[in-house]
Amino acid sequence: MKVDLHVHSTASDGAFAPAEVARRAAAAGLQAFALTDHDTLAGVAEARAAGSGLGVRVIAGCEFSVDGPGGEMHLLGYFLPDGDPAVEGFLEDQRAKRVRRAELLVGRLKKAGIPITIEQVREIAGSGAVGRPHVARALVALGAVRDVQDAFDKYLGNGRAAFVPKVLPRIADVTTLVRAAGGVTSAAHLKDRGVKPILQLLRKAGVDGVEVRHPSHDESTIKRLNKLFAELDLVPTGGSDWHGDFAVDRPAASLGSQDVPPTWLEQVERIHIERVSAEVSK
Image 1: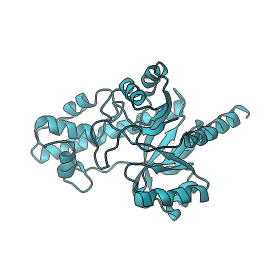
Image 2 (image 1 turned 120 degrees about the vertical axis):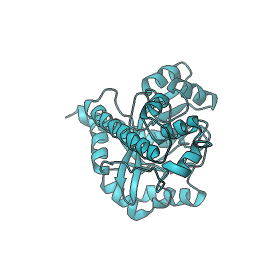
Image 3 (image 1 turned 30 degrees about the horizontal axis):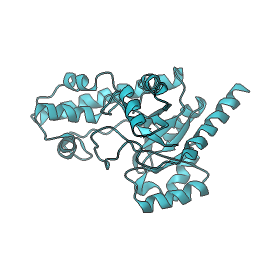
Image 4 (image 1 turned 90 degrees about the vertical axis):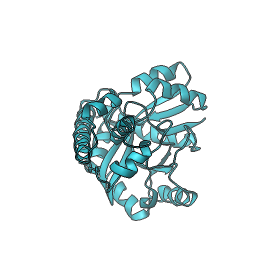
């Protein structure tokens, strides 16, 4: 069984619509994948409908941005329920903050002499959760930069002229939200921050797991995390962080490329089932 627990679509900043992601997952030989778009579950239903006819299971996931040790950190949420009022309310608020951030980015770009508008960015984002990649693509369309990577290097990356930091929730607020909905969280692509003291802090804040296999993790990082997840009673996860035919601020990797053991998905699902059962028995 081949799985990928970190995948994106046009519901946030991926290159392909959710149904197309499911089709490409099937073509890549995946039996299951988690759709983990940023701050939205909007693509899950479409991906599931396409996946059901292809023999591909789609896990309802989401990638949350949080204020963590050392700055911004991402948490992957798995097995999130459809239409949960608390989850949807939180995500709606986060998406509104994304739009506000994009407006501030556009304002800074205008001051730099680039004739970009928020309407152009929204048109590129479509129904997806607005993010910096959409601003980058607008810059490409205007001819202001060569490509998406160039947009980040010149204007949108950390410390660049148009960079605007996110307003981030606390880790414990997100883990509490996800747990209450029966979901499971995993700290994504920690890289050099994947060390014991930080993982202990994350565990204390309610994080359930750690993303061990990711394109940005070299073999030494994977080896270290393999040791630590067992030691700290964290579940392991892994995925390609696939966005399609481009990658920004991360090594590019193909869909299903990270050799994620299917037992890792089983462990995550076991926690989810236990939480749902506990809630039902109350």
